[in-house]
Length: 316
Image (cartoon, rainbow, N blue to C red; front, side, top):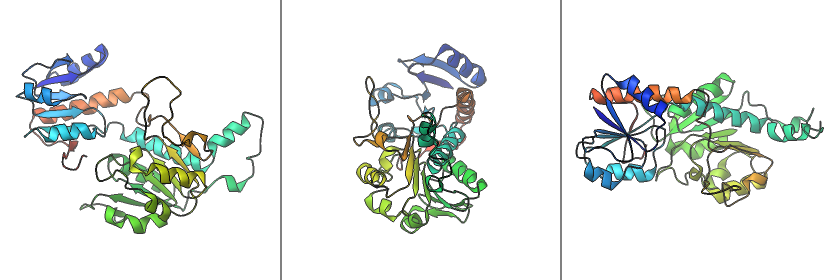
């Protein structure tokens, strides 16, 4: 199987991938794919590439959540399949729970005060929430959401989860998205791991935010535009919600800092913990990525179905 690694791949990464797949794949790397390429690995796939690569049968993005532009491009090519990786699902789920804990326990403002010699947060019950016995609603019960749910349950939280449609074998507490309006009022914490698709954009709007209990916590490690930017900021700025832990945003940097992740000053709110879309990264994560990518390519070479196939009509 002829595999092309598009874009910049470090020499060490190229060597690792060749070694892991030497029995079933030959590789090229760079901006110009050979005409006989069968699998494209990376981003940047265009209509021009599709026209020049008649043997291409699969596009693999080596991360979760392919862009909507890529999904649409693949959808236009008959017989071409799209795949992604969930190698960082554990890391992202851990980040979600870390953000949940940081917000619930007011870790950041307490840390900031202690660095100024201020012990004012000591003994103030009103500055922390007890998560044990509370309810977590996981929005998106996939590779990441399933892991978030397991961690929350291990902490003594009640868990409900929502996915596009319930599947055979799902736990009883996994519900179709149609039940979201009745589940939101039960959520002490809403944890989102949804991809961005035409169906998920704006899913949590002003009405849905209004259905959350007062002083609920929101954590988002999925995509920023799942939430209505204006209504979400207003609910946090007014204290309608307890707080939020956010690793994904509405705007991303395109130049020199400082660059803010929203048109609203989320960075000025004491009840928001901000991270720069880094939840999927951790020490050693590239080795996990290469391992999972090699496994996916082996299945493609054998003509087998992969667990990472993306439905172009749904976008995930």
